[in-house]
Structures are given as C-alpha cells and as structure tokens.
Amino acid sequence: MRLHVVNPNTTASMTAKIAAAARAIARPDTVIDARQPAMGPVSIEGFYDEAFAVPGMLGCIREADRDGANAHIIACFDDTGLDAARAVAKVPVIGIGEAGFHMASLVAARFAVVTTLGVSIVPIEHNLKKYGVADRCARVRAAEVPVLALEERNTEALGKISAEILASIRDDRAEAIVLGCAGMADLAAELADKHGLPVIDGVAAAVALAEGLVRLGLTTSRLGPYAAPRAKSYSGPFAPFQP
Image (cartoon, rainbow, N blue to C red; front, side, top):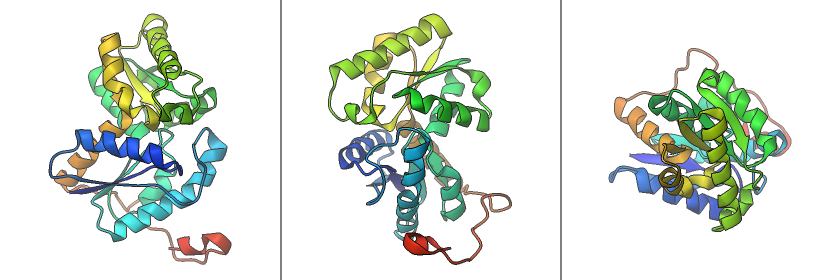
C-alpha cells in the first residue's frame, strides 16, 4: 500500500517530521510518500495562508495519483483544500483534522483541541460543525505558538501547549486532546503520558484511517459534490490545473 502524505506548506523540515510520524504508525507493508508543494506559504496560519496553499497542494495530489498512490493524507489541521482534493483525486483523501476529531470521539465523550495561534480557532470551529462533531468538542484552545516554532525542540512552546491541555482538563472537562497542528505530531505520546489522558495526533489518526479505507476497498463517492470537475479552461498560472 502506498500512502501519499502532503504537507500543504513549503517547509521541508516540517514535511520530514510529518513523514516520520506517519511511518511510525504505518503498517510494515505501507509505503509513506511525503511531499510538499514548490509554491505557497512556509506555514499555514489562518484563512489567508490557506487560500494560497491550495493550488500547490492540489498539484502534489495529482502527481501522487499518477505515481500510484492508494490514498492521500492532507497534513494540515485546517484540512486545507480537502473538498477540492476529494473532487480531483482518484483515491480516498483524508484530512488530519477530520481524522483527529473522529478518533477522539471514539475514545472520549468530550474532547478539546489545542492548536497553535488564535487565528486558527475559528477555521477549526467551522470544521467541527461541518463534520458534525461540534457537540463533542468542549473547546478549541490556542497556545499562541507560531507553527514554525515547533520545528525545533522548543521548551517554551511545549510548556505553552502543556498548559493549555491542563486548562482543558480543569476548565473544559476534556477527556481527550486533539493536537491542532501537524507540527505537533512528535509531541502526542509525551503529552499523553504527562497528563494521563488520550492525546491524538491527526497525522497518526489519518494514516490508520487511510489504511483502513484502502483495505476495505472504499473510495470517494462521485454522486455528489465530489464528482470529477467538468472540463474547462484555466488561465494564467492556473492553466496546469485544468481538469
């Protein structure tokens, strides 16, 4: 099985961290193909960055399709471009945000999300409602840690994330935590051990779900909004993306 894991931003070190987290959980017969676009922002922090990340990410999806991917994983917690990717990809596409939410709902009645910056709270809340799990989420909290601060073993950043988890348990009655950034993928086990509750990394959750979909032979339905895009002309720098 070949899983394509795409980091929608252009930071290679984050792609490497995401790939390591994916390989750590994947089955022995699963090949992890991690990629990042050549165009777009170095990190995705809010709606503006997300918009500019989508074209390059979709390009990676199309390339990996041609290379024989069995499923795609979008490794941005905002699930950047997920709906568009499902429309264009030939195989299943999973966003790490949606994967993390659903995994948390299987192990806890109430979970909380701890993300990076406050600007990401509303996009995450929108997705919780879209996926039908808003009632299971006690709160979305931000540690006020820039995404790129997670690229090094930053004690201050880890401390802020840990403090928000503690507040989620104490004030929000959270029974599980979903880490709201792919850059936190290497922190889940440590934080779970420290706080004594399930801490879900969306990258690992998405790998497990993607493997399950492939083994079940399930793929994206084409009977609704994920029907293949109709042929039409695209102009300027978007010409390569025409269906």
